Amino acid sequence: MNIPKELKYSKDHEWVKVEGNIATIGITDFAQSQLGDVVFVDLPAEGASIEQGKEFAVVESVKAVSDIYAPVSGVIKKVNTQLADAPETLNQDAYGEGWIVVVEMSAPAQTNELLDSAAYGELCEKEGH
Image (tube, rainbow, N blue to C red; front, side, top):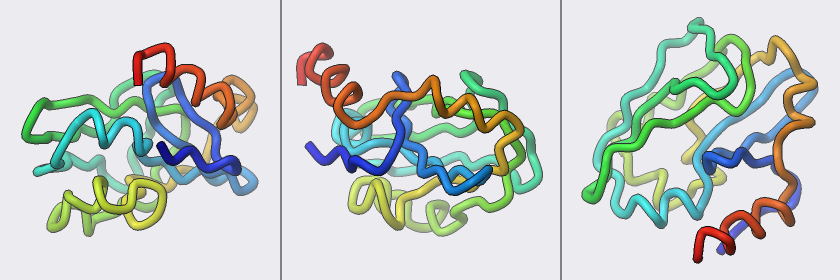
């Protein structure tokens, strides 16, 4: 399982790349493997506010429909619109081209509540994978 050390992780299986007060958010390799083949992504709008712990996007796979929860609060600055035409990018490149949104964080200290790669790896193991 791929868990890049430079990222932060939520208990809901989202990853966060933090650069100052900007956060790039996507779903983890573990999440995409659990979902199976992703067939549709319901994306939020640029300029929308997201709140930590609240659903901001939906990923539909051949197995299930899953809500994506905001690991941090802020305003969406960019949406990965290529996911609308190529949702399988989430499966193929979860930590690269499969990013979902870029957010300007309203409370950057929330990143302190996220897991590092070691803690996230332990969480995945506890969930039996």
